[in-house]
Length: 97
Image 1: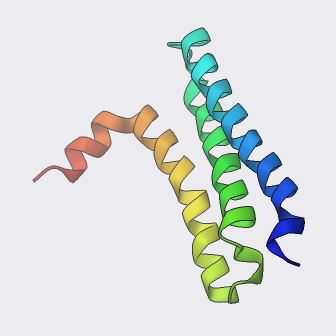
Image 2 (image 1 turned 180 degrees about the horizontal axis):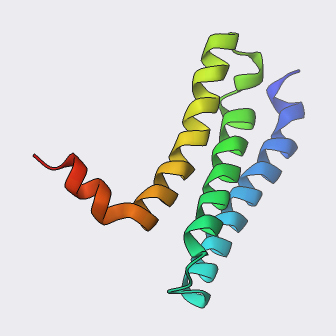
């Protein structure tokens, strides 16, 4: 598949990433202080990471080891967001010198 045939697909993915970014900005202002907002933000981050990995980095055609490492990173980034938002003080005490 050449680059020209992939261009409309990449444009749609880029527009989806822009929409997710703007949507998360709006949700942050609208639901500011909500206890479940970190979970929603983590879900949006996961969706954005998944789209970038699949469409721009082409993880589907990578070696299985590389694909697994990227999948673990995609899972750990939102998990770290949730953990630090709910248990930030405890993690800071545990990680301090």
